[in-house]
Length: 192
Image (cartoon, rainbow, N blue to C red; front, side, top):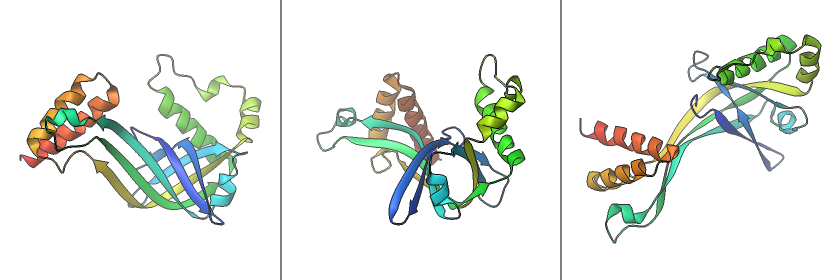
């Protein structure tokens, strides 16, 4: 949830489903499962319809196509390996300006910290920032349920999984390498 923090926020109102793609920050120490904090553009009406209702945030982690040729067996088919987290809770609006400003500041700080020359909100004239804050709506979701979802060839024998790990590691694609690492962790934990 922290490493793959660009999530899909899903809600339902009047029988219609909605989704927005947003960066969400996790407050680990809030409540038993944590709290998600974020903001969206005011013209995105999802915030109005989702306020006070149950929502789901989907955090998609690494994923990779798995070729049946990697198994070196004729009795296999193509598949997809992945890891994801679904977090559920009630969306509450952040109405006061100081809290909204803090949500934006924290979001900027989290994503700017890895930049060679991090940008700061302090570089923007306060009046301009005040105007921009009018264009967004902050929210928080106290997480009441978390589900980890993954498929990492756990239904195959270790020998096949080792072949897939090697093949994924050789593609040079970051997500493939991340899936291979997760598969390696799983195989190693089974051998303990």
